[in-house]
Amino acid sequence: MSHVNTIFNQLLQILPRHQFDALVEAHEGDRYVKGFTCWRQLITLLYAQCKGHDSLRDIVTGLVAQSGKWYHLGLSGVARSTLSDANNSRDWRIYEGLFYHLLERCKSMTPKHKFQFKNPLYSLDSSTISLCLSQYPWAKFRATKGAVKLHCLLDHSGCIPSFVFISNGSRHDVTAAKDTGLPIAPDSIVAMDRGYVDFGFLHSLHKQGVFFVTRAKENMQFTETGQQNMPVKKGLITDLSVRLTGAASLKAYPEDLRYIVWHDQDADRYFSFLTNNFTLAASSIAAIYKARWQIEIFFKWIKQNLKIKSFLGTSSNAVMTQIWVAMCYYLLLSYVKYQTRYRFSLTALSHVIKEILMERVLLIDALSLRPDRAIIKAREPDLQLTLF
Image (cartoon, rainbow, N blue to C red; front, top):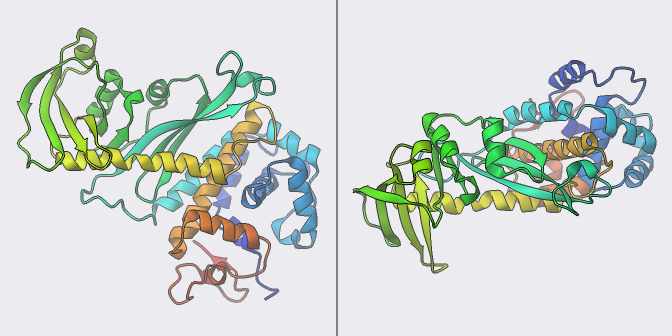
């Protein structure tokens, strides 16, 4: 099957090349560039993510070992200094833009969340990526520590990040959420922890027609305004309509809220939930907050499987570039998983791709799919992968 392109080339076909070229032109990424273009930089960084390489030397060595298969990638050779300079100087917003173009393709095929209600469901949270302050002085977090913070709005339909924002590690979660203006459609439901309990922020979501589910703080001052007329379920302790009584809190959120106390019998713990949704059953509210754990799993997965803890450069631009390319690779994996209806986990898929990245085999064969049932099909006459 020498006429079949490598698995890596088939993955690259998923990328929206025309939109990427437009981003490069808009940000003048290839200005004064002779050979190592932004596209070649992207290929190199994606190769590093696929193979798990976390140093310039490993990347170059790995590519040299596969030099006989370079021609179909458009690479003529990569020097460590060239890659380092590109990471430091090419605008990271090119790869941020690519992430959102790729996200649109992923959204069209992700499965719906498993709840019975039809509202879009999201979880909002952040995760800190520690850095050495002496090498990354621009990322000062504490007196002796450096860090950047990855803020994410996770879509439970497919468990893909629908919005990502990278900030300095010292930036508070709710401050980042307010300043960025989360792209959430009306009637959506957002689950978040107590770090986002800022009544001004919550009221802004309410005015947008967005429902939120969060934990109530223990010192929250309120008065009861009524009881919810809902079926009593096992585990439900309290289900009230309440009004805030603190002067500043009431000014920030001058409307009723729903206050639920729920007993989780499995963990033998009591949880106090706060929401502006008065329609769903209390058990559904508790289940929504429990599902928020998916974003914790997402952060754990990307830290264990993507190269976002050690970086190829020390500048802010190099770090941002590497993180955005890593997030693009996560979407590529998700796209392949849902497009091919791959039965196993995303981790298993990443391991398979790592092992056969430069092999000349159809991806549908590598994933052991029947061609007549695969959505990704080979095209004639060259039998390369058709993905869109």
